[in-house]
Length: 167
Length: 223
Image: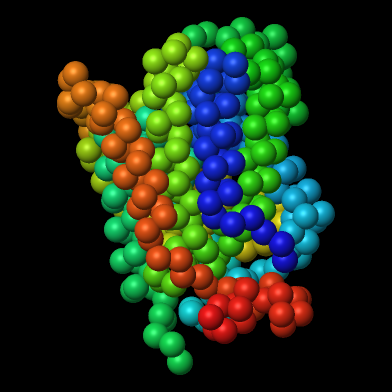
């Protein structure tokens, strides 16, 4: 399993952000949560004239939708040819070790957390990409608030939800 | 900005075509460039393995710090570069507004969900692309979340988010010292990335594919 060290990843990601922000690139930040309601509207066939939110996210949703297709492709190719980590799996090893060994439990929790993750991201106006990476890079106060709240919620949930004591 | 879309129809295929058409006309890079940005984005996330449950949920358990280290370094480096690009007219600000209730309620929901799923909306698709079915189920949950948010936006979610206090940034609070604030912010955030102690939680399923001498978890115990 080959992989890049965190600092190489950070430098590359920074380069990609600067390219995306620049007028020579896309002249906008990277975001990765608006595409979810956008696709939901496509899948459930909602009428764009009827829902004001759908109108609001037309452009951002479409942009991120295309970017997401690229991410799926890039992730797939990298996992198959470079890191050789592609494999079909239903439950992560870390879940088995620190939560339980039930596939049903993992799938249910995934579904529920996926549901609330998108509600949360859309309430806050962004996610790890849009707020934490793109927003904090612009020194936006909103993104610093989001980052702080998320970090605290993540760590408290980690403590309460998983069995973290070494057996 | 209003974008004229000529593709007709409201079936799924037509709306997908409208998505591509929208991106072509909205002036945020060509279709190929946006797709390429996605490929690189997915490639970096996959190659650094920060989309793994053991990295994100591992951070929630405080047993892995690769994700915050990489995130903080990205922010530190980008903040300095971006500021001077904006000064030179090569980029613009796209700051999100301070909406206290939305940020507090949304951030809390997001953080809890991120710790449980061990993914976020950017890393999730990469995990799906490498064959993680549980994350695909999470994404379907996310689609329903997006549906509920769209349908109840006007009546419930928009009032819940509260008033916007405007698009504030840190340097605005130090008029006359903007450059210094940017430099200090960038350096401090990068230093935080370097100073966070590196601890890692490894995935047995990945490790047992490697011979003993190549296993990073074995190397760590030797030192």
